[in-house]
Length: 264
Image (spheres, rainbow, N blue to C red):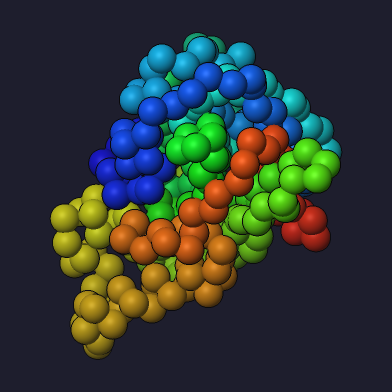
């Protein structure tokens, strides 16, 4: 599967293709790092939205406690995620243990990250000027994440969404992604549904003592119970995708009281 741009079954890409987008002013994303250490947020614009202006950045470092405001040209369809455990090797090649986009540089420059990781999807100024957004763990989890719309005074409040729990410590062993850099620790949690699609069948995660369907249901339930507001199943996004009228957005990694457990 690799670096897919948008899941073919998601509502956001469908909305983009069936609607005619109107020109309005830019939206604002405030990206906040409440994690205990530095993360490296990244953004990507959907190829089907190529007529939109370029983003001012597609990847940057954000230290613990810092925030960054980004102007998003509208209409816009794309994703944002957080990369962890990043650094440069002796050749200057930039890589991350989670969410790495494979460019060898800080900027992702149109390349999507390598699952598993948490990400938010946005379709800004779509049908009738509405925004559509969700947080998804369909491809797995690496960081808690919260999206909060910020509407202008007098406008109807819009719903928040996200996955607020740090799943790495509780991740089933068969789904856990270890650091792999000589240090102990789980850095990400794969979603069984993503692994099933990647492998073409569920055999790698089969437990001979129970049926495959039952075992798969347990893993899916793990994500759904921990992140009830997030998008956990590519075929069931009816309640995970929210709408809002022309809002700005605060996107927080490791939202309070969760401080996350990432280490540099």
